[in-house]
Length: 596
Image (cartoon, rainbow, N blue to C red; front, side, top):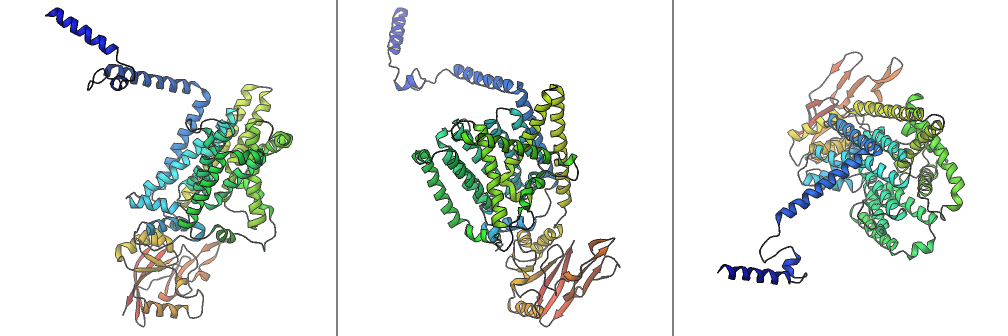
């Protein structure tokens, strides 16, 4: 019997060994149908993979450049989370409410506000999706402002690392982005800069890694797809903030300048990118934007103004402080600008012929500056320099100008003493970074209390009103956002500063019983004279213009901060309309409109 069992076993294993390699169960790791493969082998394989990953991390961390980059990223995350936390309760400004009140309208949350044409973008639609899913304002800010701001720091490093052989340029540029005061400030607000720039930087990364370096994008995607991917990111960046169409212009002119047209035409991926751009732009213009791009641009076009070169000083907006110490990054950027222009002047004859990514990238940077400045100087023609964020299409160039200037100084000193060169480089970057953080800290904390009264007034109206009630105010999007009610401006009822504006308003109130509240804010301008006497609000004290009193004429209300006089009337009747004081929220007076 035993001998028979042995013979059967030998025969069975002999047959198994003859099963072809493509047999289904053998190919999938099974010896017999329904019998799983050896779990011990699988466990060993997983363990080996984990050990291999740990070894890669250890090896990566042994590199000093990687350690410094890791430290910068950790620092960037900490300071952004810190400012996110201390500003978590701050009130929204007009432009923020313009986006978010519209988002509540899209989400069906009681408002009827539609974003102004210059602020209309994809951003409110994204916020509306978060609102619909039940996320709070705090979570939305973390997702749409803080995280993109952190990713911007990371992308700055990846872009520079892919282009420059000298890692110091990548590290310094990344640090400057991490501490740049205006990015930190805008990341604490519902502004478009962080998410829009994140998409634009993804486009730049994809373009230079895939298109120029012919390396896999994100380590996985075939470089042939560089143009379609860059186009997609660029169009979405444009959807967030319309003036980021500049990035598309940068890529187009760069390609025409560095490649022969015949080469561009023959590449099928360029045509795929062009098709993607056409589809996305048509969808954006038809489904997202209220006004055409030409209609929005015309609002900023001032042909009546003389050509003004003031915009050339945009680097001062980014980096100049009150003294030499606080302006270190500014002077480094000037040195970097001179270096790059000089280098390009010597290399222009072989930008097309030589495959030098550094020179080509710096050509891209200078070209981005020239195109952006040309728009502001010759088209917009503003007589005064704008806000720093207006010039963000040149931000990457500005960061690299600082790092190029710092590395140049260090390299000159290095010829004589390597240790002193390192110390000088660290001091330049550290001192410049300190003043950037100081400027960010001051402006962020100083602006936290602003418009708190408007927020509180909106929340108060929400608590005392019904869903169908309408409010009149000069703070339209803010009150609409916080109250989740329909809000109209005084000017929608009668022409501001007309002779009969109050009488016209009374007649309008009699005919429109849905209007139940009036919110008069001393934070917002453009109020009718009967609601707020703006002309007599300010006076001189110790040589400075200061607010000296609040005056609400139709309610015979006055608060004089100089004399201490205070007269607040709680009710007043005009024919069939009675106004009754509901609440005073910091600098906002709320009145109920009662029909008698």
